[in-house]
Amino acid sequence: MPDLAKHANEFQILVLSGPSGSGKTTVVERLILESSVPLVKSISATTRPQRKGEVDGVAYYFLSADEFLRRRDQGEFLETAEVFGAGYWYGTLKSEIDRAKAEKGWAFLEVDVEGALKIMALFPHALTIFLQPPSLEVCEQRLRSRATDSEETIQRRLRKVHEELALADRYCYQVVNDQLDQAVSEIKEIIARHAM
Ligand code: 5GP
Image (cartoon, rainbow, N blue to C red; front, side, top):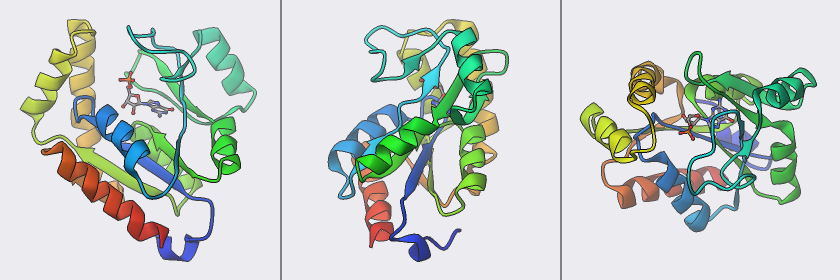
């Protein structure tokens, strides 16, 4: 656990990870609205296709693979990961961290475990939280109920769930998302404690 108190007055980074189906998206939305500390959500760039209802520049910056790799090679990213093996690229743009600094909030990164490990190495005082699904069954159920992904994608995501759970103990905190309200308040309390 990093000595977060020592860095209380510094620019802070909050990292939240959790496997697909952990209910992360709703938790992220609630935290942005309810946290006592202003959280500036970093908008990631990705090469995955835009889902119905997702707005470019809000959910993600949707980039072509060429554009993503060009910008990566120009050093525009803090971290990138090819999240589903031979699948799609995701990455945190350095400009998103600058935006959070300018808005005087904590940079709030929702990234996969690979990305989170890179952020931990770059910012040892980052506050990192792993959102645990209540069970693997619930995780699979949530993934399937989304009904936007193909069976192949669902299987790939389920394999990744296992890999991610194995690394959960690298985070400062693990929170089980069994009851949404409870998980959200637990995270809000953790944030508030570290903001003091
Ligand atoms: P989805 O395609 O369901 O929106 O996201 C898939 C995975 O990509 C999630 O585990 C999410 O946390 C991760 N992800 C989203 N943005 C980033 C990013 O900027 N960097 C990394 N490493 N992972 C990301």
